Length: 183
Length: 128
Image (cartoon, rainbow over all chains, first blue to last red; front, side):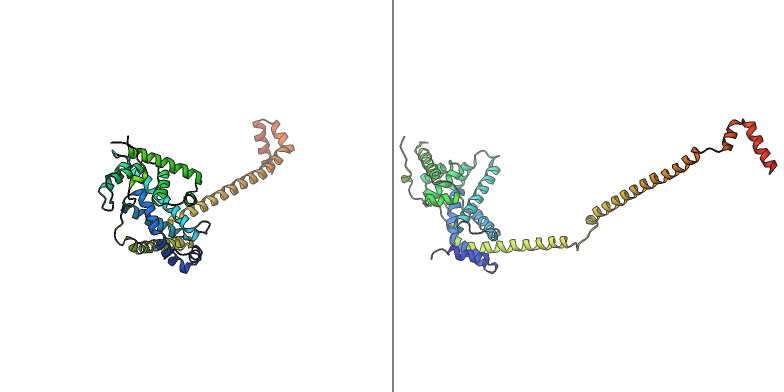
């Protein structure tokens, strides 16, 4: 079953009596794709769940302000990305007093995570990806894992296609170099 | 050092999701929205009551009372200042007018000594 048409959703969002129904349709259509986008950044299912719910709650409180200047999916992705960055920044601040940095503690948590099925190589790959700066990691995830087109990524992030291609290219180089290192 | 390419990374789907997670997500979100809306409603009621002035406490009225008192004091001070400056001006005018025109008697008395003044007044009383 395909996604609900943007025009129809916009009409429903503008009508107060149908706003809740429109919101439920948004959750149905976009929760999975947003979840995986968030999960690849925060790694843990519990954290991804928190960020995803915050994303949709923010969407709910700002529904009246949405004017349809961009596609609904773009708008939702932007909220999800902002919520993810907020989460990661807070986690970094909390982790400041710790011995290991946030990325290391995230990988350590992943080792014992019930919802992670990867082997040591997969774990190492996650560590390699975590070594990238947040925005570059986001671009890498959107391209490598979600297989999104550069134009789609450009619309969401507001970055030019050329810059995204360069960012992804360097991200791949860094990850491959990290993986090639013999511990 | 062995070269690694991302193509060798293998299966990209190493993350799993709890069963029925997405099915239950809508319900969880709707519950949270109910709570959010209820909180927003109670905040709106409190805010509108304060705006309507239905709840008047001494704390809210005190600043206005202070301002009214200060204003009254200021007006009173201004009135007092104006009253005295206007009144003393007319008095001065009177005094000045009396001072500026001495009488013949004044000249006579000023030329007499103390004995002369007392004799002058005693003689005038005897005459009367």
